Structure formats: C-alpha cells, structure tokens
Length: 245
Image (cartoon, rainbow, N blue to C red; front, top):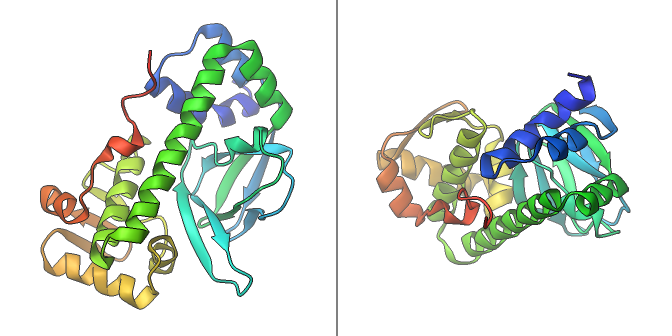
C-alpha cells in the first residue's frame, strides 16, 4: 500500500465501521492524491476567515475546532482524533468560520476539496458517508452547546471526559474505562467554558466521589454508571448505529 493510501486508511476504517463500502468506492478514495503534513503541539492548521482549498484528515494526534474573540479568549467547539476529517464542510463552504489547532504532535493529510466533491458525485455511497459524517459533527456541536449552556461545572467536565473515553474507545485508544487524557486541563477548561481552576476543582470533586481516578493524564473511570448519571451522558448523539441503510 502506498504512503498516500495508508494515510487515508484510518478514515476508510471509520466509515466502514458504520457501513461497508464497495471495493470500487474504497479504492477510489485510497487513490486520491494527498499532501501529508506534520505539526507540533499548539500549532495552527487553519485560521478563522481563511479560504481553504483542502480538507484536513487527522492521521495521528489530537486537534480542536474553536472560535475566538478579538481579545484572544477561545471557546473550543470539538476535539478530533485519528481518522476524523476535521473540516469536511470546507468542500462546500468557501470561508472557514472556525479555526483548527493541534493539541499534540499531529500528522494530517490535506485532500483537495474538488477531489472530495468529484468523489461524492461519482460514488453516491461516498456522498452519503460524507453527509452522515457532517451530521455527526453537528450533533456533537449541539450536545456541547447544551453542555456549556445548561449543565453545572461538574456535570460539564464529567460529560466531556465520558465523550473523550467513548471516542478514544472507537479508535482503540481506550477500553471504555481507562485512557490517557490527550489534552491538558487548560484545554478542557476552554472546551467546557470554565476557568482552569474551576475545571480542576470539578475533577477533584469527581475523584472524591469515587467515580473516577486520575494519575497525571491517566484517567480511570471507577464507577461508569455513577459518572454517566452525574453527566446525564447518553452516547446516542455520537450515532454509533451508523447511517440509515
């Protein structure tokens, strides 16, 4: 398998966990020309207001999409992991309304937007897959809006930790109970709309309740039902069931 194809494979595997692709459609995606890029920690991949001509697929690492104010304050809207096409909407939207930034050393491939559109036009199964992928992103954004707008500090943090666990589990980086937190507490704070101090206090409260245990960045969920109850966590919004068949 070529370097290009191996870089694209994580996304194919993600799509096929939801619904198998035809051999022809699979081969067509893996044959797309791509540009492989490496980034350091906290490096910008895309800035708000830019006009991207390529979509970004994460091969390794963790990135976020965010909105920022003129004074520099930042609200993280979502985290993305290996196998995620972070800005698939760039194939349709000509101006980036969110920024993309790394949180760890990251490898990503950039795919020409026209190639994405051509693939969707030629293969309806890819059009459905791309459409479903953007709908899952939108569902996550809606859940994060509820998280920041209506849940308490402890509930927000608990919910985000459970989401991170679920999404890492889907790519083999968590067993559903234990995982290495791929972002800092300051990053968590930017995602849940709290100060770093308040975020830390919320984690300590969850530890004292016995729901979870932490050691450095290692997180162990000791009592999943209790933590899920605190967060009102229901992974339905991640749509693991896949698209309508």
